[in-house]
Image (cartoon, rainbow, N blue to C red):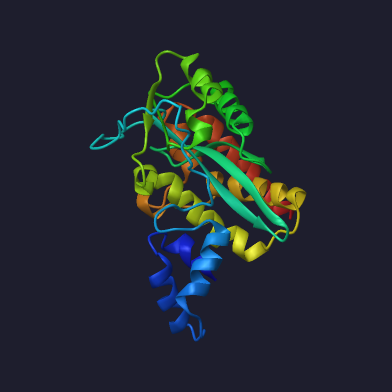
Length: 250
């Protein structure tokens, strides 16, 4: 319940969380809530357990998105890491999203927090979609690592942007993606293994990109918005036909 409520309201600290649980009928004190939140790695605003820990020797770049009008695909991409609960621990998930269309461009899972799976995700997205004008991350050690920064700097036209410390809403569209994923899939499905989780995420992200209407975009669909704005309208029509045929067959 703490994890679910924190996903909806990541600004809740132990005091508000204790009050929330008591209103749900649980006789619980703040000390126990603090212990449970510490076990999950949750604290007000910081939405994931140790997924944004900075490295003291890594370079931090300025935040470039404040006041920026995002008006086209591939103008701004963002990435972030969240955790997926399993019965025996966490699996970490990284994804890259296009700010204009909300399309999830690539994602990867890992049972460790090293930078390797983030770099792999980055290389995949560049090979599939080219490069953005601005690439935004938080200040986590994975994204400030030499390996990750070097992978971006292979493309000198990309400008690197990083969220301010403790400012989860600087990367608001990825935070909304995590909230939707957890509320609409992870909490409902209760995956029990990494393989099961991977298969479930494949289905969810296909649904998210090709079928799920987004209220903030006038109920348009990410794949449709991205494809039409990049001249790929014909390809996206074919994709919708393919999805419709699979649904009919089912």
